[in-house]
Length: 444
Ligand code: LLP
Image (tube, rainbow, N blue to C red; front, side, top):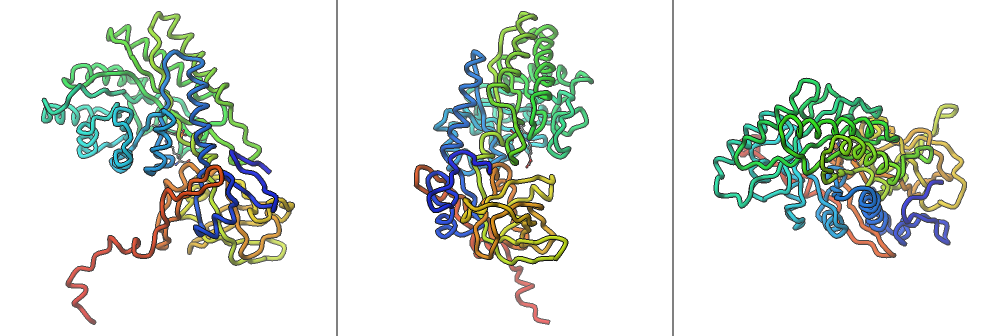
């Protein structure tokens, strides 16, 4: 059994996280429940900073909020000295509500609206990562409209599609040439974009950005993309005569969903990235930029666990046994979207042998096979299941399908549990529904 972060089996044979018995959490907060291991998250944040700071003169680690964002997590991220990247007006609003230092926020997006750009400019975000030429036009107009209203030029990075095809699931690849994201290298669009950005009053060009893919379990893609980015930094200097004071090489490092997955250590990862960059930049005589990292999954993924309660069990002799839990597609769409695999622990029987192989299914009106071929310990209705590594892109991608109430999030640490997000209630589900008067009046 793979135990992550502060997970351990206590003297009663139950799974504990952050010193709290998971069956107690289930009883107190109900299930499905997202449990975040605060110590595991903080440790990852520190490890990122240590691994890169030991190898590069100036480093910034920015949490990709899309993986898991709520105001409480913003606070933890801020306390650990990380920056934050947001990919929508909603994520930016959350960060601002949490009081996150605005100069440490970066706005992303391949189709930012005027409203989102204005919000970011007015708030004074640290960076906007410009994705396309339309965005440069929109910024030009907004900046001239707001002239005098801004206390300083707006720092921007230019988003590059380095043309690397990451060997991860095709829906979570973002950096290959055939992508909706960023300026492509081969056509010369990157240098054209930098040239344009340099001409726009009110913009301060700070450097380049890329992100090649997600859940990468080796360093090959990063090695290739960082090399391309280093060459671009050199070209910007040689052809346009400007330095890139900053270089953001994105996120993408994978995590352990299964015990068989072995992502590179942070040290090995940082070694590769910094070695490639240093080699290329030093031999070209270009100053080393501040190196920005943008991890999402690898910061929060393993820190999250989802608790479910087992309900009905259906045996199809000679075929399989379905064990249904009280959540599914709505709290974890990743198996359906990406054929994602997870490890599951029978939380109230954690010390018993997990020797019955079943298919854990959800309770949606849909064949939501959540976790096929999963070994459990004598599954019975009422048992609590703990699904590991659900901290990234589960809560963040949850929906109300079948009008399910989205689960609560609880933060655990040193025996203490605190709600970060309350469970939705039935009133929440109809809170935005409106009844047009003409419908209310009509009786058939
Ligand atoms: N920066 C940018 C610009 C990104 O697009 C992403 C993720 C990240 C950073 C963080 O990447 P990470 O370190 O988490 O791999 N919903 C999918 C993942 C989509 C990731 C998209 N971009 C999933 O559930 O696997």
